[in-house]
Length: 419
Image 1: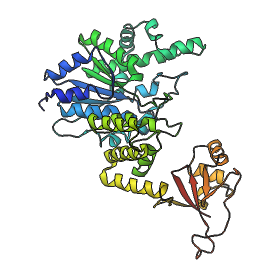
Image 2 (image 1 turned 90 degrees about the vertical axis):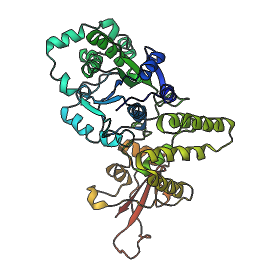
Image 3 (image 1 turned 30 degrees about the vertical axis):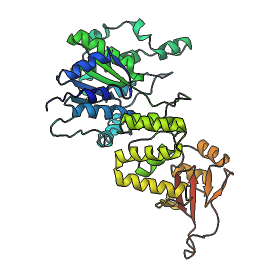
């Protein structure tokens, strides 16, 4: 595939969702305008089974570069994931088994296919796994690799400096993580690495190694992280229940975006949609001028993102379902019904049902949500965490022995229990 040189498209790629380009934006632009096809890669460790829309920012940019004719490489860090990236960690990560990692990679590529044409016949994406080369390195090769860095340079990492100050341990294997990620660049012989701002240290280690092993420049293309502009907290946090993951249903994805704070709207448009910057700037000005209701703009955002991963029809269905639940205060169309006999619990306690049906992650979370009034049974708020599901069958009166209870947790989680 011949490389396309379009300065307007290149300028848009180099200015959207970009924090920094090393050694410089101007030098990378010159390379992209030269017509030489570049080898551009992004790596990710499969520490979990799902990617979120923050991860997708990089893949959206990569697809634009692929369409220009450049060679895109998606690296699955199936070896580095077992070591654990110490980035932003106050303690060492729990090391994963090979089986854990393989299990987590099974659905990744499927999740990415809506936003990057992995199987394109003219310019397919290369898929690589760093277990293929890192697991075969000899001790002599590892020593040679380590000789390119000093302990002082490793201790420049913020999390290591913090741990030293707090007298927390730093394990020797954690120093090897940036070396291994850096060697990925050498093995793949890349020209550009794309990463989030939290991966800058690791990417720069790769830049050093490419210079020494290959005697050439490697560009580091650093993109924005999805952070709340006010609180500076990560928008996508599984532990806080704010993550919007690529394997979500259209209904859950739409609702998850609608639950984002208003201040996140503009960055989500920039980083997570295919809308032009010109159109996004119009939306930004409307929000600043307060000439529109932020909720209406957020509906547009939710539609655009859901459409990207599920298609226009599914996005329309999600929008209708959202309006049905939140504007008309109706129940969702398709609430799953579970027979309590299948749950294998000794009683009908609400708190146990919430945990076993996975409406919540733990008993402590269930108790907290119940006590703060976030749980309803048949439309009635329950604040007693010891509540048991009892009552008469009002929904299906012809079923003499069946009692159907509708449980709602928060705004978007529903289930029906057959007692």
